[in-house]
Length: 59
Image (cartoon, rainbow, N blue to C red):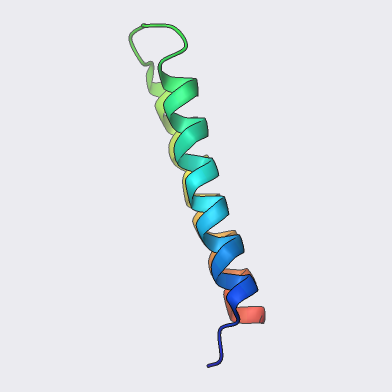
């Protein structure tokens, strides 16, 4: 499999963007995390991972 520099740059940018988003979203307001909120964020990150895997597989 030949991975281009653009793929690496996009991958790193997306990962850093998600980390920054998570950091800013989680420190926005201190609160107890509900089961519903934890489930939402878990499904969100699993969907992102599946989407990333599908994108890499399709390339």
